Length: 116
Length: 109
Image (cartoon, rainbow over all chains, first blue to last red; front, side):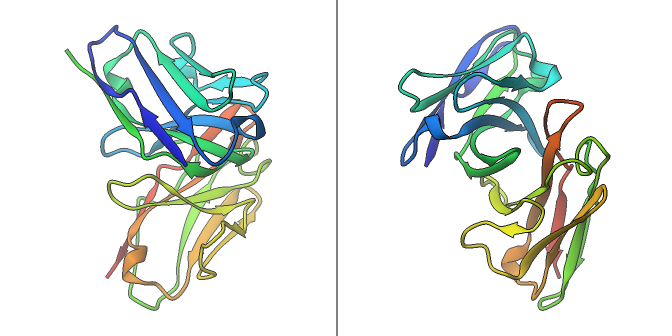
């Protein structure tokens, strides 16, 4: 099971840190991802981190602004979001990666609204 | 979206419907395709991975296939609770990231 938290209302240019807590499995065994969905729109992959933390990838639109990480205990996933823009407004889901690009376990999502 | 899906599809109960997902050589043509079902207001549900493998608990009414740079999701014996949005996804070697289709809204008439 995955449970996200940290969403809320943020002003443009502001920051927000999302968390995703796992239960029933360890991040040590899986790559983890963040996927977002703007209101009324489709799914958009945001970032991924390999089980070892060695490989990290981002969609171009968030490079240099977002940072994906895990804690040392490998039970929590984070997404540090800086320099937020209105177009970052979305429900953010964390997802476990069963194999390359295949997300078998999803959290319930946390809403981030970027607005003045 | 990098992957192209029809925005809508429909069928009557009991019917078979297919949803297509078209990409290119750097994504669908080189990597396996996955499918998700999303009911309104809920998180996506994992349906199909590795082109044609059903996730645990997914009924065999759902099947996936791929040929070249196109993939398809087929739903047979359509039921009213199949009404949802369906998304395809895969890894893109050029973008170094996961790409999703724009989604298909399935209506059961």
